[in-house]
Image (cartoon, rainbow, N blue to C red; front, side):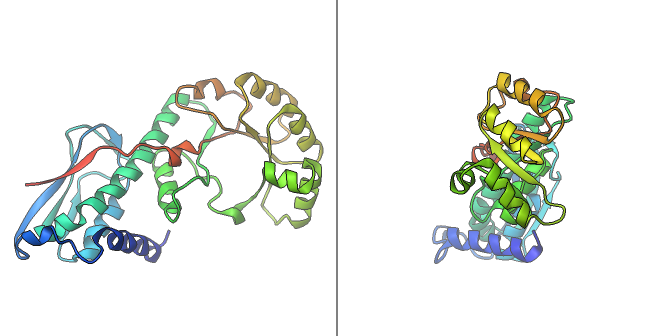
Length: 275
């Protein structure tokens, strides 16, 4: 995401929250200055420092923001993460928007890191999905990377992934893959989502290069690995959680993708305290 795209997102977030003006903060003298600090209320992986800084800077360029930690650092409960100084009315107006970005993005990076830690030294790559908040995809995918994961397709032009509804429209996996081969661009592989072993066999027979095993049990995944025998790269997705991911971290699996990294990540607890 370039600077202009990020600024547009932050400006829209400020406009959304401020509306026609922060009438509550008008009780504070407009010239009164002071400082505040971001306080971690739990342990987490920090993410969103540059976005939070931009919130204050775009609203009031005289505000000074200094973070003691960088994106990707492990923060402990009770730790001061950064400070803000300047006009207190401006600080109060920007507080919620800055915290929303920090809490949301840190939540995503934290849950991603927990998943990575759970599978240990496995060479399996943990991926996000396109199940992101509208207009915040680039920020949320950035948070996944900060947590140690990797990005799946950023948008639909990044790769061919034939899913169940594509197959229904085309009539079969074979027909769908054959059509995909006609439009395939250089350096783009053809992926197919399958929900059972028969569909896996069909996808392999027609030359799919990447297979997504959707909502399969660990036992079925083991059978799929045997059938695949290294022919295509294998990704598993659907129903995978922090509690059961170890059962799916099997030799022969290349990727595990999880929509929950972005659509279900719990915001971490951070507050802004006036000094």
